[in-house]
Image 1 (cartoon, rainbow, N blue to C red):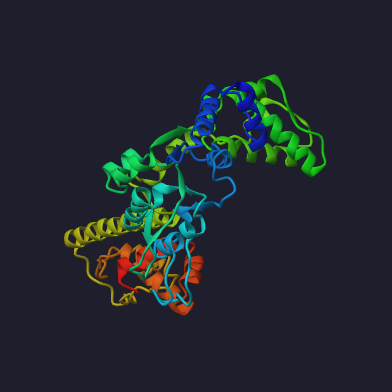
Image 2: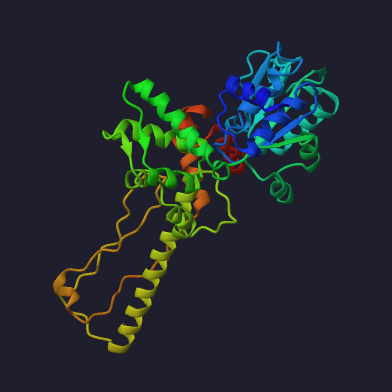
Length: 414
């Protein structure tokens, strides 16, 4: 493709930048569009991968057919097969009618599977069959159906690593990766960052009816040298923030730096949480559970140490107990939300008793905490509260429906 033709595609689909790797990605998308080959688009989150399947569809023979974009990571694991392949009436609880599914709807067109790396393994096997033979079976049915669909997939997950960890099928990877398209991150696109900034600044000036912000030379250098971990999406958000908040429309390096997250602090976050980089967490809630679990262990160890010291002290001194000394009441357990582990606080002695050299007669009871039990109880109560409605329970727990379905199966709550 000539540069003029690529430039026309960029204008049509709102792609900004002249980076060589970006131009190459657009060129490959246009060249592969007339075929029916599967395409796998890879790149970091926020680089703009969603534009490429639209280019492929619009420049293909299927452009008059359906184009359906599916975010695989946003569909609960328990319903994703039904969403993609459809289901028969009565196939499962709540299936009050027949559903065609995305592969049935997109027959003759293109289906874009975003975040394909998040698909559960059973669904990956079904998808592989569609790629190999164009056949699929609805949930609850035994009838094989045919579909003529062009599949374009995208992911920000390292699929090679996912294969080695057993989270992604190797045969499916090679089927999807017939034609790979790599979208470069913003930090590797040089002057494109400034071109994008000017476009976003102009758009927000028009949207909010105010003069467009401009960068001084030092701010421009900072913009080009920053690594942009959130890529184009992060640049757009920061440009909008500055456009709204700053009254001075000329932005220098000091002002711009105040809107850029400290990358050193971001890199140290795993260490602050005491979480190994190799360990993955499904959500921020799981990280919070781990932090609370570690804190509780620290408190337990500290109380155990204090108890041992007081016991040794009592054995050495063996003082007589004053007749006015009263046994301490039992520790008080304060009911709290299931999402926060219960901490048992021993009663505090009066100041005049602390001055006396007496043996602590309180029996030490080691606390125990099962993170699974806390999570299981919380899920159970949420389901009871919403009368078994999993969508409402997931929203109340601030987790995805997919995660809730997996936890329900794991704890045997279904």
